[in-house]
Image 1 (cartoon, one colour):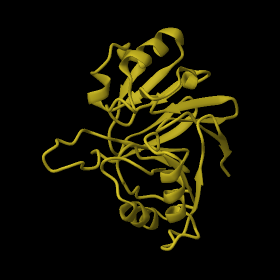
Image 2 (tube, helix red, strand yellow):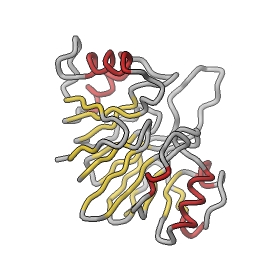
Image 3 (cartoon, helix red, strand yellow):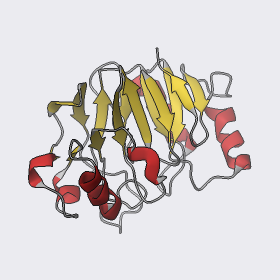
Image 4 (cartoon, helix red, strand yellow):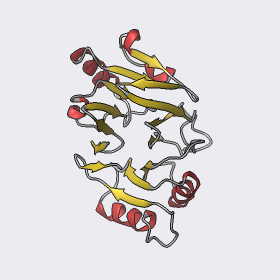
Length: 214
């Protein structure tokens, strides 16, 4: 399986000519939808979801289908037959990929700020995209997509989360607000040689860069 990062939180997964896009939001280049017949949306925040772009992609590609939770599905004008509402515990096939859903809520930003629904997606039993949450699936995860920076995150929480999930490798996402200094600093903490080892390798990809998942 090939993973391509499209900036910030969006990635595509490709295998045997099939392509799946996850969280193509307002910070994502429009070409992220190219060749994708399935889209997964974790939650409604603009950096993960753009109703305008998603509606345009559905119009442009009659084969494209979307899976997300009810809040996102009701937030844009899409053909109900092609927009599927899912929640924790659900399992489905999206463009030939086996998907399982874990998690219910976005990570807490502050007790005074209401939390929004957030679901994570485990793809083909190997790659987990959590959205903006530190959800721990109840099954083994080989590749964990790691939201390395956000108003709700701490390095300590990320290290403990990786230790609990126990993936073989982590790949950094959700890094659009970081400059090179911040990226380097986080990489020094999250890699195998960090001062507090996580037990997993860490890879950072730039926008447009791909990584072969084994």
